[in-house]
Length: 139
Image (cartoon, rainbow, N blue to C red; front, side, top):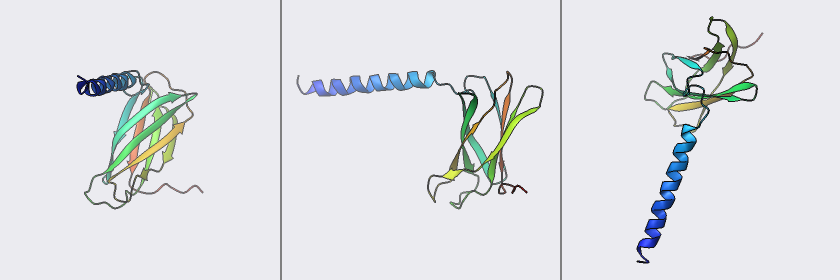
């Protein structure tokens, strides 16, 4: 009987952890998953916007996502990401350009993180575009 007790404890602990993880996912505040914000992804010839997550943070939104290479090589992913917030009438409420970081030199994807100080209106769309060229330099 003492042999089975540690195994039962591990199973119970694993069950509790899984329930807590699922509850955390279900109560997340991702504005895309809960339908508050629409996302339009525009890929380039060299890379795709493979994921986008948005959450409300104070008086702005926090956007994170992943850019993945189309080719199989492990060279850097050239370009940048342009993020625009568009209201339901098509007016641009705000936009920002950001770079992204690969987790290692061999990674085929990169992550971007940006905070946009903006108040969303109902029916807003987040347009995330990958451009294959570097940021335009301000004059």
